[in-house]
Image (cartoon, rainbow, N blue to C red; front, side, top):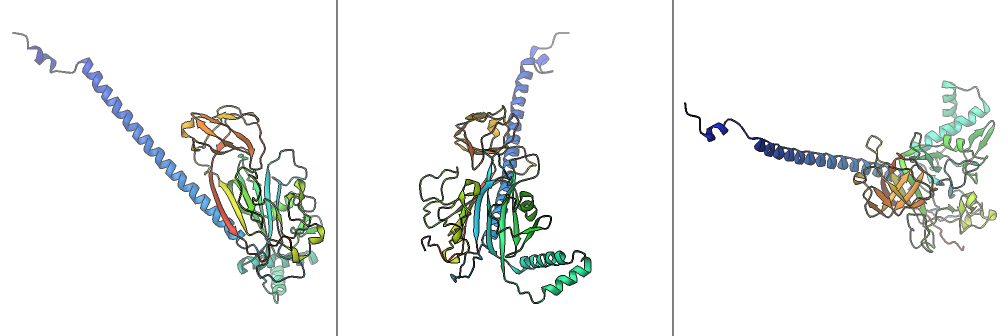
Amino acid sequence: MSPLPRASRRSDGFTLIELLVVMGILTGFLLMLAQIVDGGLRLFGEGELGQALADRASTAQRRVTQELALLRGAPTGRESPRVTDRLVVQELPLGLPPRAERGASRIQVLRGAVRLPPDRELPLLDAKIAAELLREQPTLAGAELEKAIATARQGVPLRGLGNLMLLPWRQEGSDEALLELRAAWLLPGQVVPVGPDRFVDPFDVPLPGSPELPALAAWTLTQPLVGDLLHVEFLLWSQQTQKWGRDDGTTAGGGVALRCWDSARGGWLVDAAAGGEFPFDRGAASANDPRDDVHPHAILVRLVVAQPAEYAPEGLLAADLANDDTSLRLYDGDRFPGPPGGGWIKVRSEWMAYAERSGDELRGLRRGLRGTAAKEHASGARVHVGRAVEFVVPVLHAKDDWNG
């Protein structure tokens, strides 16, 4: 029998070269498919994260605006025999320690007179009556106490007046970068316990964190208003203000908004230890003289909300960072969401600004910004970016003549 032609013998299979070509084509196709799927998943994740951050920022703005919009700055212009609508904003060490360590992070504590809606005033009135009854009759409890409260409340009109305290505080948990904004609402003149047989009106205390109003008492008095924050800042527009000022804590020339305020000009804000220097202060003689009270035109609020904890960290330090380093390395800088041309980051309790990102490196660091101190940070520390939101809340006022 004669042998088959060569073409017939080759039709039974592929040569090794042909198999390699086919495998190469399939491999390339699979790589392209994987890149497309990975890119789609990344875009989906970024979109989902962006929406979560936007929702958080919107919620934070709404809650803070609702509270600050109730500030009462003597809108009627009528003089009162005593100061009833004081606004005090102080820069104090985070946590209100009696003796702060050098370079401690600082926050702003806001205390101000507000208008109280009935649904908020009624519970406060009941709590105040209960406290007064229990001071006189400690054995009252249950239905007997409720009956006594209802009886005492009869004939007590709702005034629609109250006081608000906003207190930034370190949020519970292992990530010390996170803050929560706490709030307290009280009736005018309402006292709270600060120790055995000791009661004080928190709005009569010149310095929160002092023995008159210890840090624990201030924390117990408040409740969380907004959580998962990286930054809280208030700027106040005075008669001399021409611009809100930069976001890095520098003054950038004259005419900027103020970071502290005392509407009574009563001598509380005279140095850094007291919470800042108020340029319009007149001393203790002005404390109870309502004729020279002054209020800001508006308050600018800067908040930075952290991304939800269930998402992967925005960045991680790839090497230890000394307190004087001006650059840092990230794990996988290509996935870092911060702008390549410069932006803000927070590592533990320290805020920094960087000038540029090159690969895995953030260069041109400016350290210890936004009232924080430059510190050492270990490899693996989380690098936060968050979502910033900035908004202005007008303050009703009738008098802003600092010379009158």
